[in-house]
Each structure stands twice: as structure tokens, then as C-alpha cells.
Length: 306
Figure 1 (cartoon, helix red, strand yellow):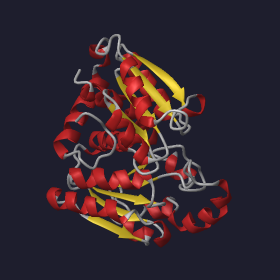
Figure 2 (cartoon, helix red, strand yellow):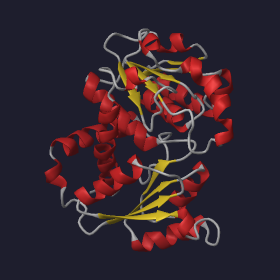
Figure 3 (tube, helix red, strand yellow):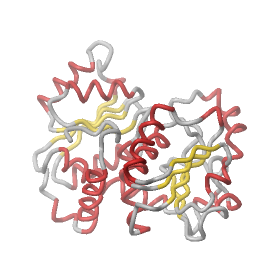
Figure 4 (cartoon, one colour):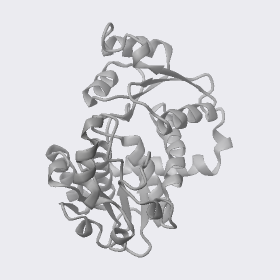
């Protein structure tokens, strides 16, 4: 695979290989300190970030390389200069590009025009790095992927839900999405996930009943109700619509007793989950955040064939 723009074309062998490499990188980081000596990553940011920027920058540093941070507001990106021209120029300077953008078509144009690997650090449609890291985290805690049940509760029409559908269906994890009827996952993505599930043996459920979604789950997952592209004026409407899908102690009681709680962060206590859940003994959100670093190292090295 030259690029990582989504998980649509990634198979279970690709994902398990990355999990294996991420595990080695986490266990013995010093073995890779010079793996990318004198290599440079250009990091293009159209959206704000904490985990994506810091984890990728630290990853390049710990692999012996260097990362350059560029905000699109400070460059002619997509306006005075086309995305294709930016990709071609950056390819002459840098060895790999990571971009965190709004439109999925923009990251795909960047990847199609670049002569170096391109990583999707997040778009409105997909967040593949997060979900690959999540699969790594789940495998660490459950010692397997296939046969588990993951329940996502909240906004079903977002990048996390879409990427979870693709990642779970590829690796044989049953996935149940509990969300309002107005915020269902996009049908074309569900259709792709169903085809993947037919190959892996996993099951997919989309329901507007949060208790039904979480019933018997090994992993309960939620995400912010106010993604960066959601206008602030919609906050009160979304809070009202999504409050029945809040992950609280009562909802967690429908999952297995040894279920873990996951959230890609940032989190708002009292909104998509209560403090008792995210700060409780079942929560693994900060291990989940740490594993972004290890998985992204594996992704970088794999795409650069280092």
C-alpha cells in the first residue's frame, strides 16, 4: 500500500501486520531510533489538533527523522495554488506527507498527485489512523479481534463511526451502532462494510436503540457530539438529540461485565459520556491515546518500506 487515505482497500493481513509491528515498536522503541534518519514528514493541518500533531511529530523524532508543521491558513494550499501542485512540490522536499483536512476528496487528490506516501490524519469522512490504533489497543486488552462485539453509541454519521465500520468488518469484530435516525452512518459506507463482513464473518447492526446496541458488548465506544465541522449554533439541538445516547453507568450495565470503554478524545464529561465512565475502571481512553504514537510509527515505516 502506497498511501493510507481510508480503510476501504485495506484487508485483514495489512491490519494484522501493522498491529504486529506496532507491538514491537511499543516494546522496543530504541531498536528503531535511526530507522528514518534524515527523513522528513510534512504535516498539513486544515483542522485543529492535539493528538494527531503531537503523536506524529514525536513519532518522526523517535524514529530519527523530522516533522514540519504547516497550517493551510499560512499557505496558498487549495486557493492560490492547487492541491495537486502542492503535492508535487512537497514531494520534491519531503519523504512522506500527513494531512488533517475537512474534505475526503482533498486528501485523495493530495495522495493521487504526490510522489511520496500520503497519510490521512483525519477528514470529515474517515479517521483511519485512529481506528488502526484502536484495533491495536483492543487486541492488547482482549488478546484477539475476531468474535468480539464493539458498540458505538452517539453520532453515527461521522469519521469515527465510518472507519470503525470498515475496520471492524475487516477484522471480524461484530459492530453495533446505536444512533438517532437523523444521524445514521452513510449507506455507501455501510454497504462496503457489509461486503467486508461477509468475508470476515462479522455482524453489523445499525439501530436507534442505545441499550440494544450495547447489549453484550466487549467494547463500548463513543465520540464527541460536536466535531470540528459542526457549527456552534447546532450545539443545543444536537445535545437534545444525542442525550439519550450518553454512555453512563446505566448504559454500560448492558455490556459485558469486563467490557472496556473507549473514546478517541477530546471528550466532554456530561455530554457523550459521564465522568464516572471515562474516569472509571473500565476506561482505557488514555492507553488508546498513547497507542496512536506506536501505531502511527508502524504506519509510517510500512508506507516508507523502512
